[in-house]
Image 1 (cartoon, one colour):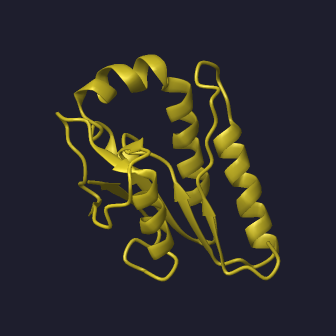
Image 2: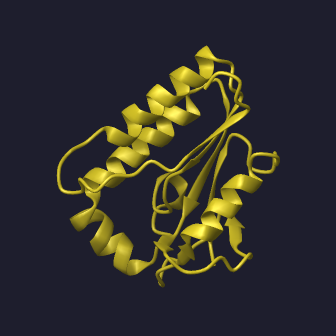
Length: 150
């Protein structure tokens, strides 16, 4: 951390079916190191469907995938966002739709009200990475969570 200007975090794991704190505790450790070494900005990827974006992943994810298959994962992502919002660093939370391995399109929709209550929204990992990198120099979403999808 020493000497860095920012941290980009896209923590994840494959332990979906058991209670976990990998994301929230990992983020807590990152923030502690950032505060210790005076690193000012964190840009962190979580997911649509958390906090005020609940329901914006579409019906299939809202009614089946999140509550039946991924509840422990999303509970930990919620804790992760709480840890971030309670920190003293400058932060931006990026909430993508369903991630794909597609090519970077170079365009996306972003903001507080992005997503769909009916249809599953998607975005490529490449476009999310590009959006996150842009947040290093932008104050548009500073200290807030923004959705991003195609």
